[in-house]
Image 1 (cartoon, rainbow, N blue to C red):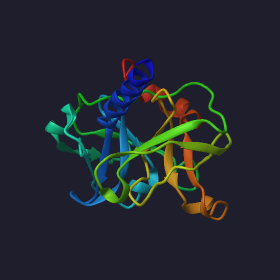
Image 2 (cartoon, rainbow, N blue to C red):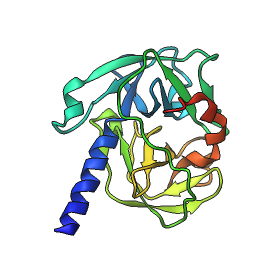
Image 3 (cartoon, rainbow, N blue to C red):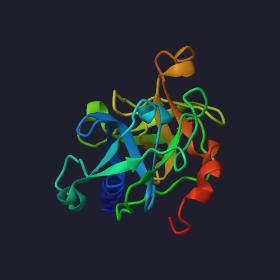
Image 4 (cartoon, rainbow, N blue to C red):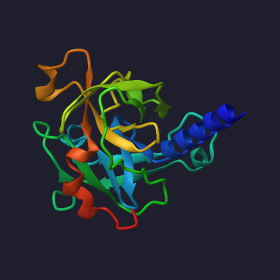
Length: 210
């Protein structure tokens, strides 16, 4: 019974976290990546997801089951102005902290502040090929440095910018894929950006109560 209860609790956490993951679109209706909510009016994604867009939108609750958050699907514009977006280029850490046009009551995903290690079990919630939000099976951290994580999770086009979680359903990294300067180094394993590698650069722009 205890084992079944633990499984149920894990499923509930996964479904709750899924409500904080969005499909990023540009133009409206065309999926270009994934993002996730980190404060009442901001989301995180990869910079390369947005670098060629003049306008973009976040589609909330584009999910695959009839859960509570699925019943309130909506879309919201993103503010891509340079004076509000905090980002790092594709040749660096490749992240973007983007302001939502309006505050949201969606789930704010918890960020991991602890050390992560090679071999840790991980999962991703993403929009592969722009499809409905998907919770992955277990994968592992295969290689790790301060600013780069290689993982074994199965991803696809549209997964870039998605949150990667530890076993406690805290975000440890942003999925990046296999692009740019990393492509020459990794031909099979997928890359991600550890949250701890840039959290100090965005912390002051997150709500104090998140």
